[in-house]
Image (tube, rainbow, N blue to C red):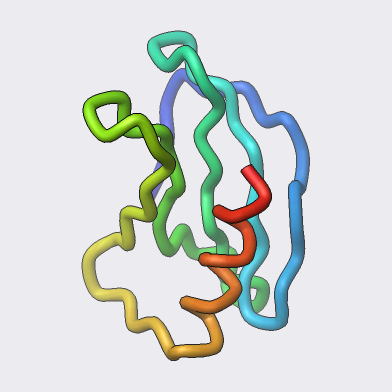
Length: 81
């Protein structure tokens, strides 16, 4: 999956199976964090700020599977935001 109109801001955190990369999008007041498979480079999902709930949310992409360990890593990262 390709993301348009983004500015790559660097790797925020690396876990065993995926890394989190920060992107700044002009249409978003806060950064968006992409979750990328370490081995294949595939985009697995994103973490973005959901204004209606006033909190960060994880949005897994279609056809991705998440183990409990990976979900704990996602929770860990979100807790640091």
